[in-house]
Length: 149
Ligand SMILES: [Zn+2]
Image (tube, rainbow, N blue to C red; front, side):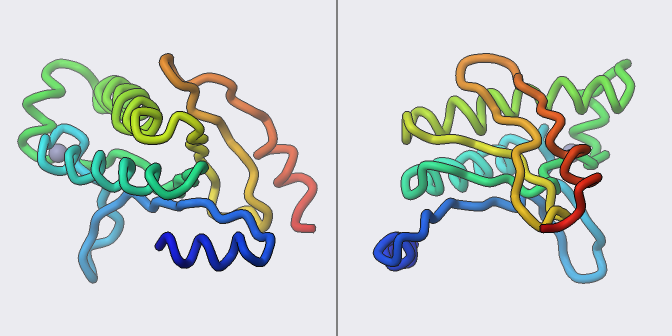
């Protein structure tokens, strides 16, 4: 991966890492990581850390989601709604497994969430270090209205 990055940079092209954070098997449809499961969280943490060790920017595909309803998730959710539980967990995942984790490896890192449908990559939001997700931008709607180009 470092050689690929070096190749592009030798041609004057900035290279960024990209992560599509979902699991699945053929015929299985789209299945997110189980963000409640310690083993899957650790797998994701290692992916982010290794990517941050190579690149100064990590682009997260918008499949960075949470749709698991396994027994572990059901127990952890307790009396909360799925929406409440998932928002709480994904906020924590963004802060700890993405921002703090990536910054601990590469202080210059910029984690961005991108929407796959856009022709040009555009930040939907930038995950800020040491705090909750901030800086929701309105580029997405503006960009959709402009169309490609
Ligand atoms: Zn689960």
